[in-house]
Length: 149
Image: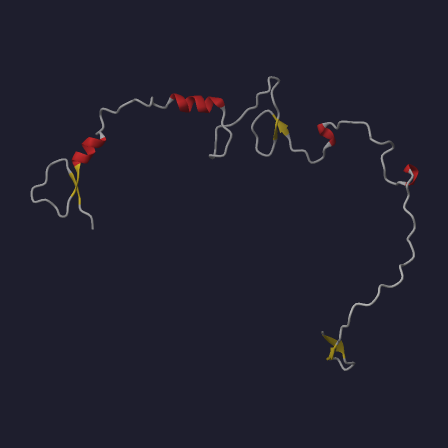
């Protein structure tokens, strides 16, 4: 092992330390004072064990956010007597959503078997869009010609 020790001139001197085998353990030290084992010897404890259950009112909690029926940012939601809470319309995809908002959105959705007769079908679109190598000499009206590069 190498060690650097002060040389007395404001610098250091490198010394080599040889380390031999570990020696025998020394004598055990004196035992410390015994800890208390009596209930009376314990400090900062409740008057009895276990303390009676108890409650605190919200007014006792100094850093409790406001509790509101309305949806106010940074507040705790208070439930109405029937257990319902007020939820605003969603702002992001992670927002809770009120039932009214969902019912309105679902009511605007079309049935899965609906059709749009005023629009072209996929087959119609395939007939109206043609992939070609170059612009045709006599293009048809209403046909979109796609020329890949």
